[in-house]
Image 1 (cartoon, helix red, strand yellow):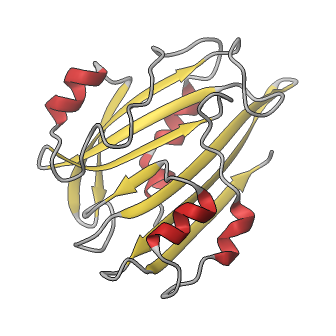
Image 2 (tube, helix red, strand yellow):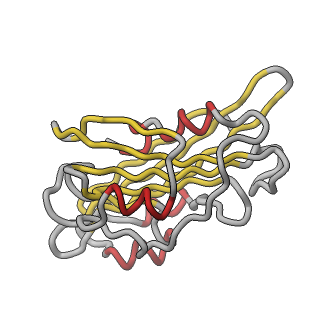
Length: 197
């Protein structure tokens, strides 16, 4: 199951897309917060109060979420006609970070990925480094209980767009979750895409 699709991150982004919404933020570097080490209070101390908090159940465990969202009709999107937005979610189990995911349609820090390369990833053959070479650094990382495996880190990639067409909005989302075995070889590939570009 794709954590990003089930988490509500995309729904939060959609709800804030009219005009300018949320407080702008800069995505911290990938090593700022450590999975399995960083606490909820440490994230809040650096990032400030989130736009939304919530609770979800992952693999029968209660996980707390903190999400930061920003959109601006005056910003520069990656794709013409898209309302640029960015969102960042952190997930905590027993007050410790177990997942982080970032999504942006701003040109400057977009999270788009080339889904045509997914077919080049093979279970039991492609390494963690091979995935990075194909798709770039992941925009999401997860450990148990965000993933079923009790050891190791899974990679996630997500991108979504929102366009206003006449009197309605058109949404598109694609997301990919890749898990690895204890030899750092791909053990699972979970891809989903929905909506209209």
